[in-house]
Amino acid sequence: MKRVSVLFISVLILLGMLAGCSGSAGGPQEESSGDSSAQKGKVTLNFWTFWGSETRRPVIEKIINDFNKSQDDIYVKHTFLPFGDIWTKNLAAISAGNPPDVIINDINSVQHRAKNNQSTNLSEYIKDDSFKGNFYPRLWDTVQYKGDPYAVPFNTDTRLLFYNKKAFKEAGLDPNKPPKTWDELEAYAKKLDKKSGDRYERIGFYPLWGSFGPPSWLMNADNGKGFLSQNNEVQINTPEKLEGLKWLKSWNDRIGQENVNAFKAEFGSEQSNPFIAGKVGMWVDVATFYTQIRDFGKDMDFGVAPIPAKSADAKHWSDGGGFVAEIPKGAKHPKESYEFIKYLTGEKAQAYWASKNFDNVANKKASEDALSKLSGNDKMVYKEAVDNLQVTTMNPVPADAPDYQNKINPLIDAVLLGKEKPENALKKAQSEVEQSLKK
Image (tube, rainbow, N blue to C red; front, side):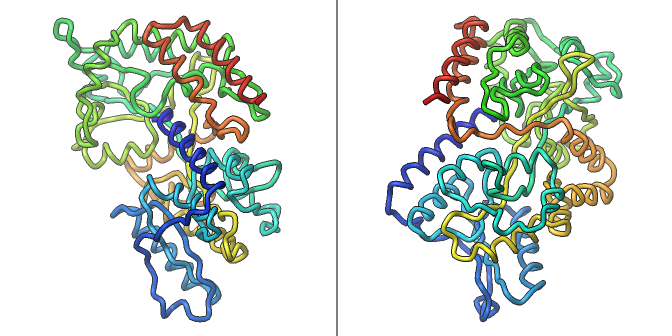
């Protein structure tokens, strides 16, 4: 999932470059909410989001309506565009000189848009130095480019280990003691495996299912260090990541790539997710995966814990993504847009969003407020997610090498398939990314 996201961002970046050379308009906007009679005498802002579901659209529009009623100078109109269209249309609209006033955008590619003059520097509007203190520090760091903020964090995510307590009991494992290290994870997985001859009826665990791909595990292996440092120093070919890559390959070797492929071919919709269906004993995913368990798991007995650490003296590292509120370059009303963004990322709006969507919001106080109002499994999972943000790292797409992961992933895939030695793969990846950054 993470690799798909990186590829998607790379496509958007390419489209952004093309849009910068083009005079084409952004096209007609999709269905909008708003009463034209309420706009008289006010500055009208067009706010683009991809939140059109039955769950999320009413929530964001309630926040918008509350803002519109809270003051007499600004009227915000919500425009929904599908997830696959919104950012490409935004880039085309920027090129045409007619962008939206505020847009929800990807958090890990803020720096790229800032560098390419596709977003507005907010330092002119953020007068209070304490404003950044409202947000988790790692999120605020992600919206910086050359020391200035180019967006405001809206929400984020983190990864957790979900485990089937019923399956634990069947395998003779304590359902209240999830694995804490990689060694324990592997030992538990072997006990949870169920086979009929050569065919798996249940696979205890496979590290590349869910939403924690090879880059995430290698970061976990290397004490939270991603492929690039904050200063864009390449740190791919390290002893720790080499050990982590060999560990990943060992899972393929033990289970067998054919078994992995055959099992994955049976994966279906949310209702038939293999973990929820009892075909996988442990599963790593974003915290909001819990809503699928809640809605489709039929009172499934499950637990949640941090992702196992590489060793007993290491941290339970995770990585995260999320979205920001951003003012596209060329927006007609940046001052008013920032006023709306302050409300959108403020404690009241963020707490409402979190409570209705079970989402990790960027505002720290709002996150704590949402947690205090939950109970049962809701509270169990949300508290684990909030606590896990302390060991969650962001991996912004570097402005100077937006496609760097596309150079790494094929080499890692080759290792997992037995077509490349781990040592050679990491050495090649280190060299290719270094050359890309030099260019």
